[in-house]
Image 1 (cartoon, rainbow, N blue to C red):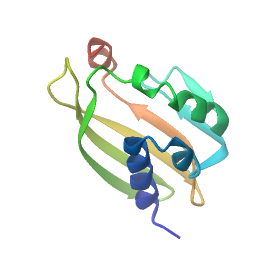
Image 2: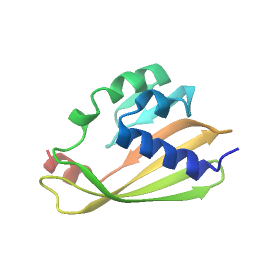
Image 3: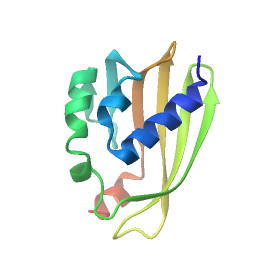
Image 4: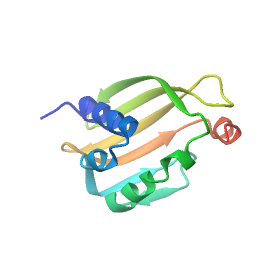
Length: 120
């Protein structure tokens, strides 16, 4: 079995390549996606996959990942993402991935929501 961190890394690579079908293979059917601000949730791999089609609209204009590292714990991985956009010179966000076995059951984004809103 791959390390949990390598599963997450593979997912980031799939996002960068626009290979969303490949990405969702590492998610459980009954998964949750909690978006920045923690108020919006998507339930289920099918809904998550559909939402990926609009990914460019949910990210700030000019969004670019500058650096990425994974911290692996027991049944979870945290990605620390260094990013910038057209209106933000540099910032960081984190994403928590919770696993059951080798499948992601929850993805939760943590961002400075005020900065995130201003980035649009």
